[in-house]
Amino acid sequence: MENFKDNRFDDLQTPCLILDEARMQRNISRLRDRAQGLGVVLRPHLKTAKSVDVARQLLEGGNGPATVSTLREAEIFAEAGVHDILYAVGIAPGKLGRVADIRAGGCDLTVILDSPEQAQAIAEFTASTGQVIPAMIEIDSDGHRGGLLPDDAALIKVAQVLADAGGAFRGVLTHAGESYGAPGRAAQAEFAEKERAAVVQAAANLARAGLDCSVVSVGSTPTAHAAENLEGVSELRAGVFTFFDLVMAGIGVCDVDDIALSVLTTVIGHQREKGWILVDAGWMAMSRDRGTANQAVDQGYGLICGEDGKVLPDLVLSAANQEHGTITVRAGSGGKLPDLPVGTRLRVLPNHACATGAQHSRYNVVPAQAGQPLMQWERFSGW
Image (tube, rainbow, N blue to C red; front, side, top):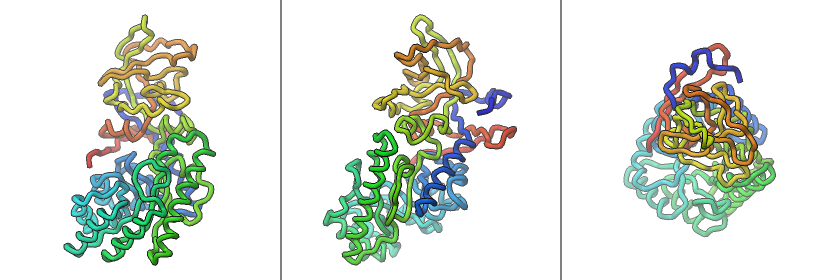
C-alpha cells in the first residue's frame, strides 16, 4: 500500500474510520466472480457497510438485489434507489405497517419468518389492508439460530398460510452462522453443502405439497467463498466480505492484506516499565468484539499497523478502556516494543468489521485511484 502521509490524514481527528477503496473493490470483485461461476445471483448484505456510497459499488447497477438487517437500512437504501431488498431478520408483527410503507414507495421488500404465528400475522395484515407482504421461510441448516428444519411439518403449514394470503410465499433461505467458527476451506465447504442441502430439501418438500419456491437462498461470508456446488440454489448472500476483518482472516477466508477497514489512532502516552503504548482508540472506537479470542491467534482488540497500513510485527491492541487503548508486544512472540513517540499515527485492523464500523458516523476513504484526495462517505445507524 502506498504511503498516505502527504497531508492525507493530518487533518483527521482520531480515532476515526479508514476505508481502503482498492481493497474493498478487490473483495467485491472476488465474490461477484465466484457467484457468477457458481451460476447464482449475488445478493450482498448491506449491514456491514450501512452506507449508500458503498452500496453503489456493491450492487451491480446500484439498485439491487440486496440484503439488510434493519428496517432503517431498508428505508435508506430504498430511498437511494435500491428496489429489491430482503429484510433478513425474523419479522415482528408490529413492523408490518412499516414494511408496507417501504413497499408502497416502489421497493420490493421481502421479509423472513419461521413460525405459524408470523405467517398468520402477515395473512391478517393482508386481509385487513389489501397489501401483500412477500415472505421467505428461514431454514435451520446448522442449529446456529432460528429456522425450521427442512422436514418439519410446520414448514408446509407456514408456506400454505402465506400462499393463501394473496401469494405472499416467496421461497426459503438459510444462513450457516456456525461456519464462522470453522477454520479452513474444507470445513467451510462442508458448511456450504449443509446450507445447500437443507434449503434444497426444504424446497423439494414444499414442491411435493404443491408449493413452489421462486427463491432458494443461502449464504454467509465463509460459505460463500468455499461453496463448490450450488445446484438447486438461486441466490447467494454475504456481507462482511466487503471489508473483511481479523475473524475472517483467522479462519482463512481472507488474508490480513485483504482487510479494507481500519481505525486511525494517535499515540497519547507510554508506560514503558509495563511495556505499554497508550492510544486514543479504546472500545468506543473498536467495539468490545473479541471475536478472535477463541481462534488459534488472539488478536486482542485489533492488529496494529503503521499509518501507511502496513502491519507492525508482533503488536496488538491488547486492552481497551472506553477511550484508551493499550498496545503491547504479543505475548510469547519475542518481539520488541518499538519507539513510537506521542503524536505518532497508527491504524488498527478490527476483529469484526460490522461492530467496529457501527462505532463511527463516516468512512474516510483512501481512493483506489492514486493521487486523488481523501474522500468522506457517510454511514448511518439505527433500526
